[in-house]
Length: 243
Image 1 (cartoon, rainbow, N blue to C red):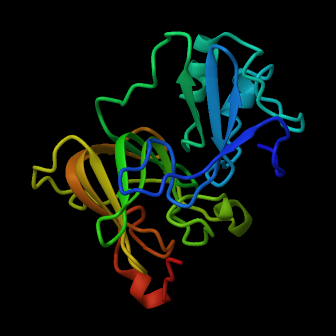
Image 2 (tube, rainbow, N blue to C red):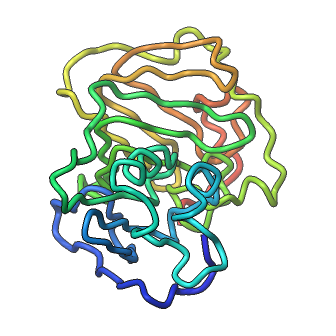
């Protein structure tokens, strides 16, 4: 939540192998805050200031304080519960007291948030066109306005751009179910093109009224589709640049 590096935190370098540690994005740098019971890691790059942590456990998460995370200010169970509510995966934890580790959800879900990003939960793998792992996580927020400087991740650019989309699922045949693919949800943000999801998932509308399930879908990430959240080829027309 802080815009400056937090004194008192330790910086952990990003993993550089194909098998990235869960929660660490390639090229990212996370900061660690520790107590005897639990360590909390935070990625500034992935944080969109959703403030779930601040609202639910302000004694631990206090923007403006240095360090802004005090892992000694609450029990490990309470901190772990709040960390798992972070919608972007910017926060993660590791227990030192024998408490339960963060579980991988048994089902993969995609929420098309109103006027905002795609919010994914589950066993998520983000890969590039060559199949290299960019991120493995249980929670990921992906840009769909086309303007993020941290693509494919959301960086809140939609707010400054006043991106507007209710998150409705209007098309009934965009989600396909060819089957296969195992239990993980593989996300491929194709260069200068759309976002491909393969693997079992359920996608839900922003108002929570519509859900579709399948194993394959192509989603807009340029912000120009007339069939949002699904791709309609607009990335070619608008000259979308994914870098």
